[in-house]
Length: 166
Image 1 (cartoon, helix red, strand yellow):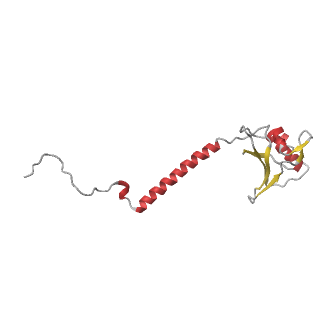
Image 2 (cartoon, one colour):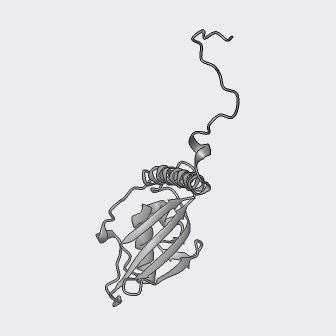
Image 3 (tube, one colour):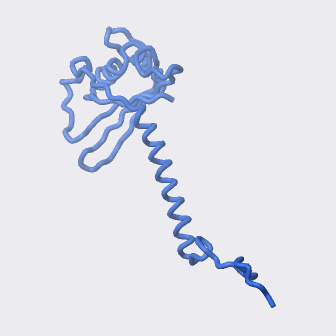
């Protein structure tokens, strides 16, 4: 005869499945895809926030931009000067020559964008009346000097610019 000692008797056999193992295949796929999507959104937000912290805005003095009054400019267009620098110290001010100069013309009605590149070695007149390569204007006068050079020599009405460092 077996004695009852008060100890629990272990049952031999299979254990009941619990948790993730009991989920249907649809739930498992949904959980994995949802977790992956959440991870992508979090990582993307962190990267975007780190890039946004590097942006700065500088207001140009429109009196120094040599906007041409002789040429009648069309209404409904926004012209923006794009400058690409190769600054070793991550400085976007004077002292850096612009490797790339592009004029972006945006049609406000049709949302069409046209881009025109200015060759960096084009000989143009600077604010002081001397002639030099187009990429030197940014070095001598910063963004105001470079925008002024474009407005003076190409009869433009540019008041906005974007500068990036490669």
